[in-house]
Length: 380
Ligand code: XIL
Image 1 (tube, protein in one colour):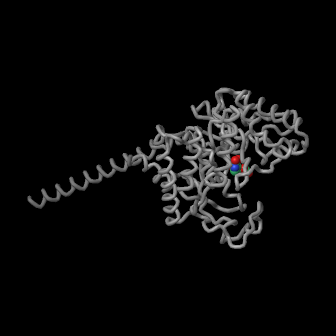
Image 2: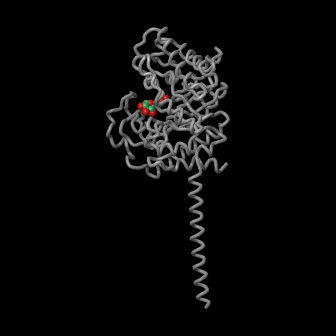
Image 3: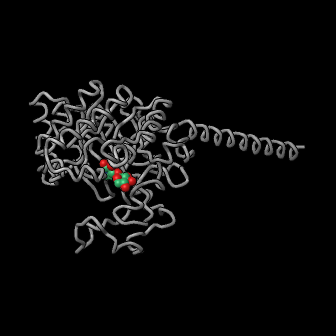
């Protein structure tokens, strides 16, 4: 009899343990399904992603599902750049941009316009202009038409992109060469007039560098001295596991914020692959075709090994800890892509590699880095 009771007791224990494990599994599942980046950082800053044409057109529906769940701001990866939206002198192409804005509105998102004045991905017809008056007229037409069309709908504009050299001096772009340095103030003035409520941003890469930081400070100050509206500095944040250092990033956040403008991280990704410019003897140039197909430059073609996964997670944790420390100065953190499969780092700077720079993998699954970033909020 005693034995029978013991067996019964044992069975009950086993069954209740199974039930409680199932319950725990279920609650973990529910937590996983309901947690989100945008929810975690709701009181801190916007969390965004750049989206491409297939996503804007909702052809890539898995991406859209994830986008809507996790992010509350979007940036068009390519479809509002000059060559796309204003391909010929007298014709604009708004089909994709209109759908982009509609997608953002439908999902209540903070909508970013990228970008008005940039030497890269500029329409070829603009590159033929050689006199200042004609160029000024075209820039005016471009800004008035686009900012005007989306007035009150696009909340933030990257007005000028990448106007500085690494040493902080002005880049010899077609705009500088033809119009002189006044083109920057001119673009901001026009944008402010076309939509007085839009937030206006100067956007660039390597803005953690002390010399480039000094260039931005000078640029912002000179706009402010002229009474021209500028609301923010966008640090692109195409970073790597090796750097920049948290200290350099922090110094830039503080320097820009001291000017009375907000800081945004506009194009965040962390490459886990070797960069050609870090190699001994590699020339710093724009084309790295000689490395295409070189397996040493593409070490993780199938999946990211656990050790690298953890390294990436720790790196993202450090970055987001810094962002949280300065959340009063930061408006927005936007990733340059929704998931690893979509990242431009699979084809730049070397074409045909498999990079893993974002928080979601190619199957739209959150990576260890996602957990480490969300955990920062749970522990607060
Ligand atoms: C990149 C896109 O991601 C690529 O698809 C395109 O081929 C080149 O441009 N700085 C910027 C972004 O401001 O617009 C760039 O986007 C990445 C660097």
